Length: 346
Ligand code: PHE
Image (cartoon, protein in one colour):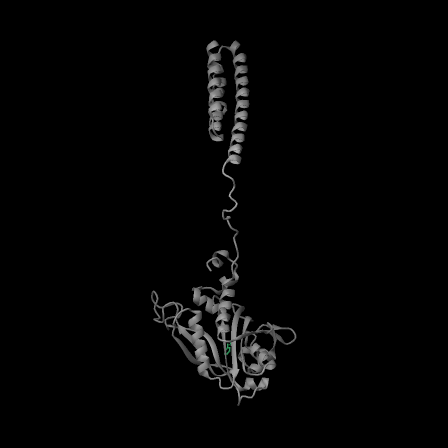
């Protein structure tokens, strides 16, 4: 009995010393677990009561409980003391330096499409083109008829055009802005029109809504050479390199002659090969990039321009297509998906 009580006394003293020596919350907790924990030394004494003569058990049990209480109070007191000391240290330590740079807020950025659009307009603005505007919901006259696209032309087909009630359509290209500008201004003029256009089309390279930039220049003596010069300079600026550019005869109802413009493939540098057949240009080495031509006299007739006196050129390009080629983006839908993992790359 005496030895058991002595043993308890020793344990308690040892524990109190450990508590007093604990310098921080963790070491204090280690002491607490060692003595007061479920498998702690005091608990072990209680477990060992079986070996103690029955008449001594209550007294020893009571002493264990008293010791537990005292130690628990000592732990609490020490915990407060440690906390208080840490607070003191924090307060008397180096002052908060409010001149340090902050952690920063995540901040948005201009969408890659908007940026491409802005770059295109900047370059063309530098060539003297001013921005003109037109509505997204057009009448058939401006979207088709005045552009020399007759009633039965396949481009008007249900498959391509979104029809809106009241004989209106979602504009299928930015070319109707040409007509609106020429209806209200006399030459010389040099404008670009930018914005959304709509076509019934949906796959990895086509979207039912996409963006175009249209250019129009009308004056006395405007020739196809001017068109070639402007577009070649523009394409080399937007792709930031001396790419080969070729003009391939084509057809648009509102231009004559018409051309499609190709650039040397940005993936394979015109070789047609990149790990086998280049999958961007399908081996041809060329990429179709825009449509253009000299304004058809029939269009001038609709707006009352004298086509004996004036000539003009026009071109139209897809902003998504340029952004996809410039940044090697394989799927047009990524532009509209709001996926930050995609957007953050730009
Ligand atoms: N509007 C034509 C299109 O959307 C592009 C174009 C514009 C072609 C101007 C020639 C001149 O496909």
